[in-house]
Image (cartoon, rainbow, N blue to C red; front, side, top):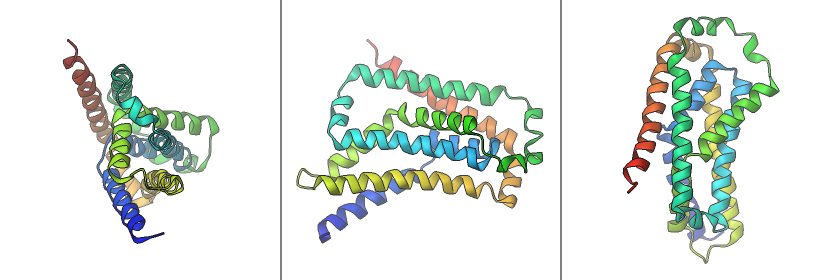
Length: 219
């Protein structure tokens, strides 16, 4: 690998990781799942988010991403469905009573048990969050358009795509396992009710703003 490709790889990888550090709907869902579920099942959310990212990365690599980004109808549909999805999650977070959080600290043993149905449910939630966020498509499209010229080989692009997918997955898994540490988890559990309400407000606001932006652009 020549110095030019190494420079491209480092630049794209750094920009991608910095974007991960910026909290968004996916980050909020990972924290929410890590607190309310157990760490093994919560990995389903991380896998779902990473899979959604992989889908958009693949579409951008094969050139379909550029076509999708120019389809106004598709982008509007994605925004509407994504906005409603986030508001749906926000509604359930906000309506949960305080006593629903009372058994968090008593579920230590249960938190080590793996449930395929719960894992799949978490996976679907994570996947929908990632795939219904048009910003993910636009981010990868802009990143690849700027950094990856036609001269760059397809094998290098695939390598970069696999790298970014794995980084998304392991970053979310790291967050999940960090919250599984007893001292850190206990602090979060004590504030779980308030964290969930803040989560609801944040996701609700994001969903509302997405729908508002769509509505404001209508003739």
